[in-house]
Image 1 (cartoon, rainbow, N blue to C red):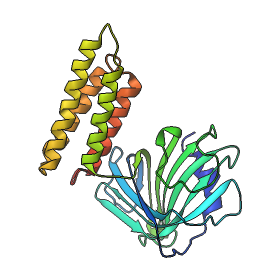
Image 2 (image 1 turned 180 degrees about the horizontal axis):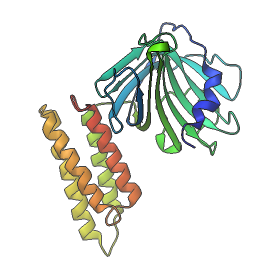
Image 3 (image 1 turned 30 degrees about the vertical axis):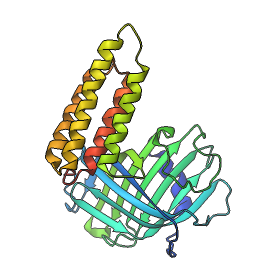
Length: 278
């Protein structure tokens, strides 16, 4: 399933486009983890497991460039990504929204072109794919970030082809997409989610569950306080400890899905704390 969406969709979005002036802009942030690396130039110093983060900006009123009712293509304003200490950015490319195209697939993707690293053929992609065709009802451009939980493929790709000198290809998995990269706001979101989990606890283990969840929430609040006084290293330590404690509660006072959600959110926050990506 993974990565097949790139091959199925990319043929339809290969044209490089110019970018008009923007009026109503939205910035979307994404994070993830590297799965595989091919770096024949030894330029990126990236290894599997490295965290990455990025963002793209677009105008919510951008028209669809494609007449196909199952495939929307929309110019974006900018696209940048940092993988470890390797950063690239461009103002060329597009967003596409596939609704049951092709073969009943829904997909949301962003492509960046012309990164001026190897040449015009440089490309970076993020791709969310849903083989149940339930993510979208049309090919309209969503004004908000897509809900990542609706997609079973969450792919990231850097594809730089430097002719005879060698290639760079970095594959990864998107772990979060959001309209904010503020650690404070993201930490408050985690606190709110834990509060909701506390309200859902039931007897006979209600007391023990509430105590455990409050202890988890205390670690998040510790991280929040550390961020607010610019003690970034302490915030990261609190969040890493939080992840360990959540993992220990998985299958006990948290379901596996609940634990995975909290751990994923903690990873996303760590990526956006200054100096954390390395």
